[in-house]
Length: 443
Ligand SMILES: Cc1ncc(COP(=O)(O)O)c(C=O)c1O
View 1 (cartoon, protein in one colour):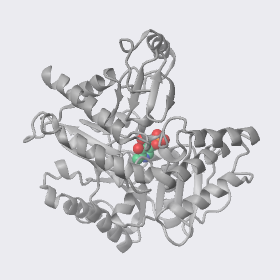
View 2 (tube, protein in one colour):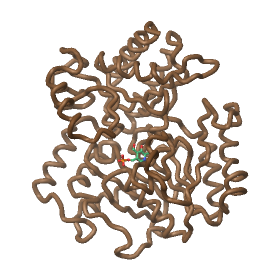
View 3 (tube, helix red, strand yellow):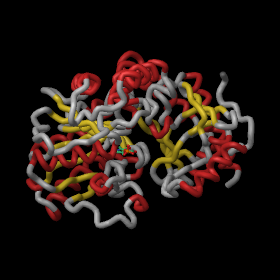
């Protein structure tokens, strides 16, 4: 089927009826950017309840890594479901959880043995990393980065510093958390040029946080997204990651890579941190790991994960059906999809960059693999953020049948299923260009 096909005004009548019901019974805290009500999906195709067919470059917020309803993943889910749905891996044993831990030990960039703790979501993976960091180090404080997103439960929310609304009204948060500037070199948080941004952001930890706020020997961990996701798809320069690793080693601080969004092949490598050749001590994984089934994993050096029975557990964590889906997902990633993310990602990046000639709204196009952010500005010199225009472009793309999502204050993220083809990338670029034209004309 050629995609997209828009048959009704959006939302169509069936979608409208469901949205109306949702509006009275579902939590209003959800952030729906446009009125998509999905009926089914296949690969990069999403059909809504009115028969409109969309090209998906959002993948349920970077989750449907193998595409919607990949037959291998569905088969693994069906086969496991027919055997048993749950037995709580915290109290009993089952092989899919062991096999997944073995597989993760093989693919994560941590040498010398790795253990996995299983939860159900990204925020639980981060919570487990936080608890283990404190437990293993005997220290209490944590450093995270401005613009970072690590989840919404109270511990991970304390690290999250993406949008104030995500924290507003929920304080006091976990004490002992300090935030450092993240090297967003397109608009350096310290007001520096691209050349100096990464080094100075790193020095801020050493010269400001360690000098004025917390002694490094009381810091348990530094938690970093190698590519900030919700913060706007901002890539940390490799040198920054390398110097961060050196700094943490100097002070015996654990380095935790939150690869909930950037992991599982999306960057064109299995994990984004591999671009810098840095080995973290722990990693938080979720989103794309099980192609859409709920699963979050905290992976740590085996020697670090030395907490006793009862110290941490989760009834549903590492559900056997999710583990089966993850094993099928990782198999597909290794076979073709990590390579496809690198190949088609580079192709899509070139296509999106080529749009900047005709579209002055585009300030920056960045990312790795199929994790691409396009930052919109009102003026390329002043870099004034085009936030309302960003929202309008996301909506204009939707009306034309392309699903993308906002990220940060004024960026748009392209996070398609990793099965995206070059022909689909061409379609995405074409529609995105038309959406930009519509919004630029209306200004
Ligand atoms: C980098 C990162 N960490 C943690 C989370 C939290 O994941 P979840 O929503 O599954 O709790 C997210 C979610 O967007 C994320 O992008």
